[in-house]
Length: 369
Ligand SMILES: *Cc1c(COP(=O)(O)O)cnc(C)c1O
Image 1 (cartoon, rainbow, N blue to C red):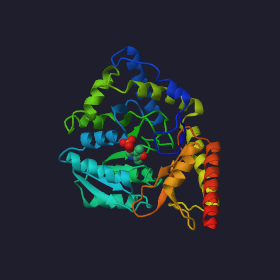
Image 2 (tube, rainbow, N blue to C red):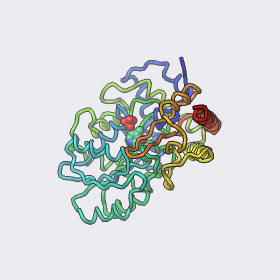
Image 3 (cartoon, rainbow, N blue to C red):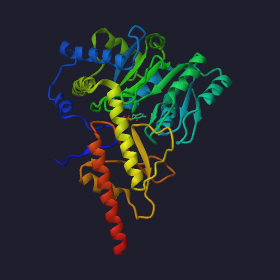
Image 4 (cartoon, rainbow, N blue to C red):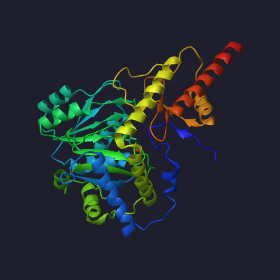
């Protein structure tokens, strides 16, 4: 089988040992398995730096979007309203979730290269007292932008509202002291910075707010309160759980600890990202963002002055061991390179060397014709 490493925002390259943890079948109702779920839930609270008496963790089948949909459709009541702060495709997706579920919402949009402004959020809350919740994406994987959720959290808490954060591509890749930053609901998934495989999302949230959402859910399978009630008893999931994915995730958490926890992982990702941008700029590639660049994924403009085809470049790099990512901006020609997962500076050196070879080949072709 032709294998290659993933320089994408998830699924990511995982270790061989995480993949090996899946070579085992488990019953969803067996104690052996339920214990694993309970250990994962407990560990997530530690990583989020929260008091277990105040917060809880719920695992939810499906990809990250299922987790976001579970929260928005389960905790914002019919007579409440969520302010969605958006500066990318994942913010826009939150509005789609609200449309489909009939969740009342207000919309605050910024261009994709601007962070959400805490003062503007404060103004929205002041002008529309019917807003009860505020939702934002932390690391906007669309562009690679990192929103200042600490600043937004401050104004949300000052106004006494509930704060919901999609930290899908940032949780465990950067430090998020969830309780200190006033985050009430945080959503992430198995196949991002914890470096597990796809199959479930997880929600870390305040117990009292989850309790208060008891009758608000709009769906059976994504009902967050019911999922919590069942899982909290002894670790059993309500419906069939992704058993192999859960075992892989438990292994990935163990390996995160071995690496030195989130501080060590954040440092590795930041170094990968710094090196990537340095090497790409040296080759003449411009980054889409000038500031608020996350250490997770970077958007680059197509190079100037060479005939450039993304698919051709993609196939060239893939044949040499790495998969990169197309752009997700509607009005600019860009591509993205992620640097999370089981990726080290050596990989960044490799992929940028391959890209340099590709560009040299294109230049030679241009001269010959
Ligand atoms: C990956 C991601 C999601 C979830 O996407 P899925 O394809 O459903 O896993 C949501 N928000 C952000 C910011 C993401 O990076």
